[in-house]
Length: 429
Image (cartoon, rainbow, N blue to C red; front, side, top):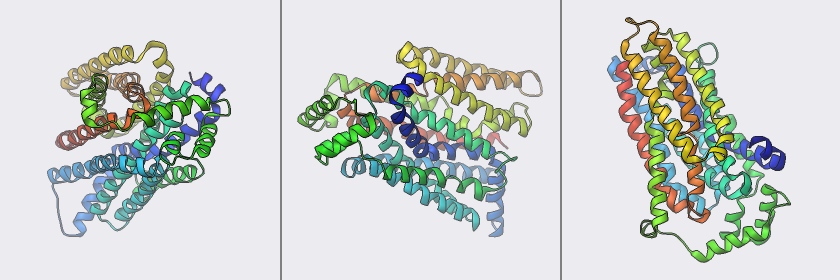
């Protein structure tokens, strides 16, 4: 699929991959670097509070760190709620630019908080990062689905998951003690660059042809946008015919979604797969894989190395999965790799329960099953939900149907972060 897409739509593929990576960078990066740079953040928080005369014990630190990490999820939820208003009134392009501009500002707030030893300011920065990520990523989903050529729309739908995987990897690598883990100012400040690039790139790109046609009602600009993203060979008449049908169908309400069997099923199925994506444990694993590896008997250095290898496997598997989705089908990949994902989790729990002291070989089994977990996730529950969101319903019904699905997903993320991350804090004592 990659070779064919690059051959026939190379410009569109590369442009949308660039926009996806720069817009989704913060979303993965803020998950990655707290993992390997955990000790530096712990020292920063403890030293900052000590300077004020506030001493905190391990339990209090765990609550502070859990709350700080969870602030991103709260911001993302708020960003998701306000996205429909921004995307429908001002456009997908403005939404992506606005979300990334917030990310640039939020990164500055985070850096300032570290510079002046104010953990509260750093927490505010993560809240704002979540807000910007929520707006940018949801507007990006609409932008990609509405702008990509029809033949590669499925491939392009996977760019967001792929971008998150690579940005998590960069966060983990740069957060290691051998690179930038000891310099939190540089580690957190680097995230400004991709967000700024996203704003700059989108400034010179038109909005999605669908938004221009239906909302701005400018046929000439809509045609120019179609040609810009899909090439001169695109079928303009067919595109405008679909826009006309959408305009005639009017808005889709929540009552209509529930009363229409196909839309109701799509909403339920979409909600289930996105919630399953969260409850596989991928978010706490991405944040605390180093802690897991240390707890089963590895040294801190080897724990960081395995965490990085884990995400490398995640990235490669996600890239490969885009070639298999159309060949084997969404349902087959979801069921088979979802089942293998659960199996790898069960085996890990059994091996980890043996303990590093009783069976030294068990830790290597834990490492292998953790790698298997990430590989199977990247072929199944990682990318498939994004494909389903693009394909279960007609394009004009994406927003009203999948906005509640995304809200379900973010509520799940928030509850997972609040509950599991605090529990993990006790495990690190």
